[in-house]
Length: 154
Image 1 (cartoon, rainbow, N blue to C red):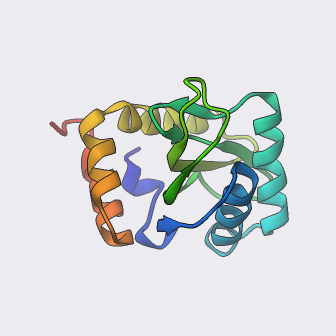
Image 2: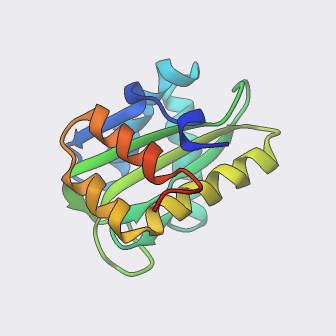
């Protein structure tokens, strides 16, 4: 499973204008709803419930909110680059400007974990993060994420 299986240019938000974690999640849920075929409020509540367990702000300006939803046919990813970094209660206490949301079918444990591992590898890559931060269109962000997320990318 490559990032091209999770992500589309339509599911990339190049300049999200959010003032806080909750607002960012709400805006991403609105964007995700027609893409994944689930109500925005269900997506929002799923992601916020996961945040209650512990922040998905993994450090270095990155957050990977994720959750499982009934009725999804596969794992979906959404990538947002924030116009201004926000507090996300990240493990390193640094503000977040890159958010990669994963939404998986309720019964997709292995696929969900594989997708999380793939996204984590991408977001740990310093060059990939720098390239994502420098991109200004959904198409560019998508291309960078897919290319950098390939198993044999340099």
